[in-house]
Amino acid sequence: MTATSNKENLQFQTEVNQLLHLMIHSLYSNKEIFLRELISNGSDACDKLRFEAIGNDSLYETDSELRVEVEFDAAAGTITVRDNGIGMNRDEVVTNIGTIAKSGTKEFLSKLTGDEKKDSHMIGQFGVGFYASFIVADKVTLTTRRAGDAASEGVRWESDAQSGYSLEQVEKATRGTEIVLHLKEDEKLLADGWRLRNIIRQYSDHIPLPVNMRKTEAGEIKDEWETVNKANALWTRAKSEVTDEEYQEFYKHVSHDWEDALAWSHNRVEGKYEYTSLLYLPSKAPFDMFDRDNTHGLKLYVQRVFIMEDKEFKLMPRYLRFVRGVLDSNDLPLNVSREILQGNKIIENMKNASVKKVIGLLENMIANEPDKYQKFWKEFGKVLKEGPGEDFSNREQIAKLLRFSSTLDDSAEQTVSLPDYMARMKEGQDKIYYITADSHTAAKNSPHLEVFRKKGIEVLLLSDRVDEWLVQHLMEFEGKSLQSVAKGQLDLSALESEEDKQAQEKVEAEAKNMVEHIKTALGEKVGDVRVSHRLTTSPSCIVLNDHDMALYMQQLMKQAGHEMPDTKPALEINPTHPLLKRMEAETDDERFGEWSSILLDQAILAEGGQLDDPAGFVNRLNKLMLAMG
Image (cartoon, rainbow, N blue to C red):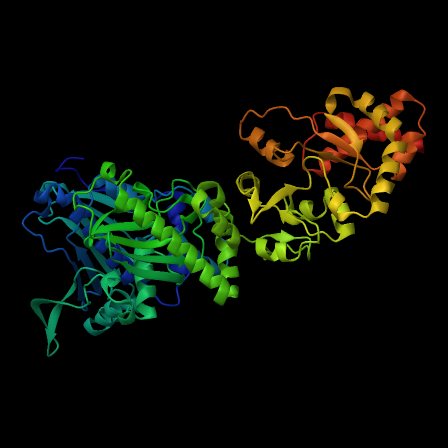
């Protein structure tokens, strides 16, 4: 676009229209937060300019006092919020305003329920703060210019949230962004100096740069500006001086979340390295928590100067990607670069200490607020389960934080910790038993659990997708190995009586010929056939090798296009089952082979696997059913 180009009218993306409709019609209980969102965006823009200007101070353009300004015109029914931050060029306006350039937008919209009251709370998870403007305005005009660009390269964006938006190139003498809200008729009372000041002090007092308004004397608005907020970095204040309400409002500023934080940890570290950390645990998981490209995280400051987002320097490990907050170092240079951050001892020290602070915060919650921890676990438990595979040095501590379902009550709610499990272990039990499946129902109904239920041995029921990853890396806990009940040879001899052992040996001896017969009939389809120690009521089950991936996970990996090695599971049979008794009496080898194949196919289906020849399974089953009739 050239400096002489005309106004261009464009349409929103479909997703933007849906979000705007939700913003406008799902009215929030407190509309005043629109101002907090706009001031937060202005503060972020100033932070970004301060960082870019470290290497290029010409970006300040003779105006180095960064600030946000709020004005109003009661007669016109407008509120104006402007900043002298980094600003935007045309492409950035289109990316950040004209479209919602966020991965997972459609996924977010698919989760909307249609209940406007419930859906309104999800907006905060999506983080579309600018669009909060349309809660109170029926038209918004945004004028911006990126620092360093010519005055002629300003951009004006305007929308009524109904008919798309317009874009035009305009003259803008100053850098930064100005947003004019044309208030709805029933919202024009917001254009009031006293009310706006109260809103700023309530929601933006913690913003670490001035939020200015024009002075008012005897009802007359003066040309002189005054700072309305405290304008100091909240994290630099002593904990005793900060109220819970201030911590919560700062959380909403730094995270762009509209929900309160669940908990936080504020610490100042002195000694070899000096830095301050203010770390928050959100109360709700963001909708894109499992998007590996999401941009949330901590913000790094050096001597209260914003440097960069955590996505660029990975201060928090992936399994703690839900943590929000700031880290402010006194030891790093202001012109710190990504290269300097790589392998930097100061950064490593801050990272390790911050991880321990978060773990300590969770441990304290377990000890003193278990209900709150359970709320945390429901939101972030699946992510925390990635920890043992990512953080070897803290593996044992992370393991104590994990929660699972178990056969103790078969509930789908994950409330059982590993210490809980160990406290209930049977005398002589030397393993922590678990089973993985693609659903809680499949796990609790697995035939592999039969002998464990009979003997009253608790088994952890793992049905989250991450659980297969977890058990590959968490192989023991406090000296007890974790053992899948569906893999490898099962040895419960330490928990069995002499009579149980003799009875099992007798069954194995009597079934020896049938085992060989089935093994011959199945041939290369299985790795082995043996009498089961697991089964008490089911006729058969398949057992994988110790290091094989569960069948349902193998299937998922194949569907995702990954090559998987061929696995030949063992088929375990229960010779006391009536079906096996029927097979024992079968004299026709062909029919015996069909029975054997059905036993195997049923066992594969019970484990969440897929049959190579489902039509063949149906045909064999129909044939045998007709023969029995």
